[in-house]
Length: 138
Ligand code: RTP
Ligand code: MG
Image (spheres, rainbow, N blue to C red):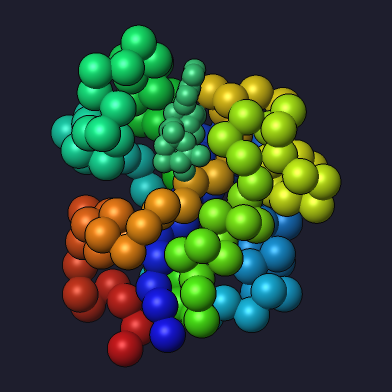
């Protein structure tokens, strides 16, 4: 069993896509062990996306992700980290395979609806950044 951090980004929440995305996750069979709607602080956003701090799009990325409520999720299941990444599809929706969240529900790289941890190290770090122990099911 593996746990990963998933998020519906502000564009997805604003567009009313939360139920659709939760339905996809439930149909897949992941167990939602943490779930909350929240605003992300500037500090948390910079820490979450620290790997991109020197990239030209960093400022835009931080202001986008802090610009409206997100839905933060902890998902549990076999191979959940790569599995959820697969369900999201490529970063640029134009390159995402049909049937993925980004291919089906997004048009731009900057507003691509969901986030998923990209490794077990990232998953552990991001779950700690967004959830306290008592917010997660055992
Ligand atoms: P995420 O971290 O949000 O799940 O997305 P990802 O792994 O698929 O992509 P990543 O390389 O980690 O990039 C994080 C987010 O930054 C924005 N981005 N913009 N303009 C650009 O070239 C560019 N590259 C990345 C995207 O919104 C991406 O999701
Ligand atoms: Mg990433």
